[in-house]
Length: 151
Image 1 (cartoon, rainbow, N blue to C red):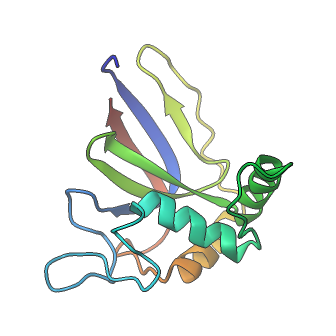
Image 2: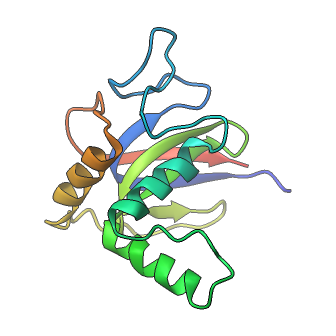
């Protein structure tokens, strides 16, 4: 794997985590994330959060070999209106909750044009996702966030 640094711009919330402190109020005495749906033994945060959001959108299938599984999963992901993104590095990810359609990645050597228009639906979709996840960010409101990912 080659190493490069990419710029990531999203509209949403910085949840952090990984080897950094979580930027949400649902943390335990030692800074661990305390959510009733998170089972660190079986899933990483990204996988567990995505499963939770998909279930809220009505997609609970687990048999990926079933005919049409990935199409139905894609449709359900589209219904959530949000996506979990990671930044920092692949080995030590920190997390963002981003409005779908707001994520722009500038890969090393690329220059991307950015439209800072905020879709009126984004804030409501982000709030609904936070409610499903049971998370309260320490960030006061959704905003544009610029971060980097090395990997």
